Image (cartoon, rainbow, N blue to C red):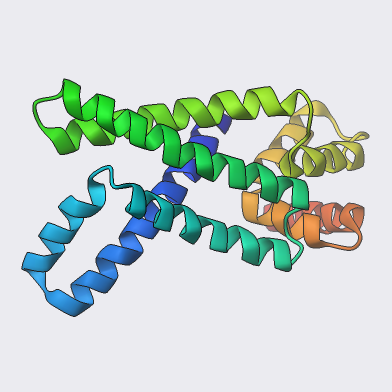
Length: 189
């Protein structure tokens, strides 16, 4: 499940800038332009990929300025965005040449290569540097040390990436966890 959520974040980071561009073109031009724009956006165009990367980085810059992510996490995200550009383009070109339908093959190739590169990068970098998520989960585990294993797992599953970012931004992270646990217990009652 964690891999799916991690890959879901990657997919959202890849799709969001394209959807924004499609929406802007839809407002400006109508259905014919939408179709043509969609096809052009899906092609492996380096300029489009760089604009997509910058759009994603804009979200990370906002999180960094709000202190919802660390500088180290920002650099990790910057490298991951670069890998998405590089391996997404490589995957697109490989997939497009292997499939009869260029766009379908390109999408499959880009998705596979992007997810594989992100997964490999995460595994390699986690050996040396912990992500913000890992650091926050460690705080949660420390706060839940007296709870049974089943309750710890249940509480941890309830934490969304957005809540972990809020926890990172919190001045008292332990208090944030305790309030979160109390809120969950109140909802159960």
